[in-house]
Image (cartoon, rainbow, N blue to C red; front, side, top):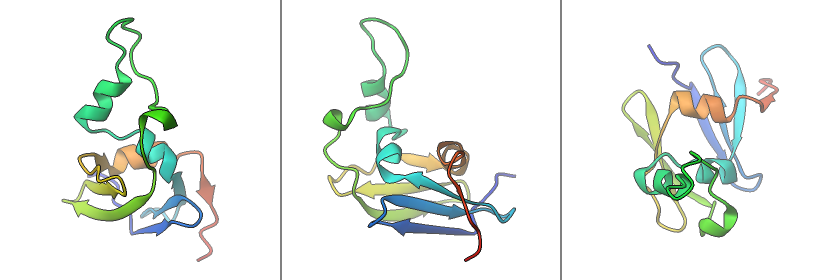
Length: 111
């Protein structure tokens, strides 16, 4: 069974998505990095360099209009869908992807 966050909180001022996991760990992911790592087909295509066939790269700030989060919607028991302020909302962020993207941002769980 996938690890499901106990709590998901958006800190728009700080630019974070904070996730509290069942093991008690609290991790944060930068909203800008989440937007750059959007897993939808369109963004995956932007990351794929077909001419040089070098694989994937992060979408740059110039390639995306906004990293401002508008809404987070749960998708089953495995993911969330994020709507960005530019209207982009086709990326489904699995909990395993979120845990990976936030892996180096452990924060105090003293809340």
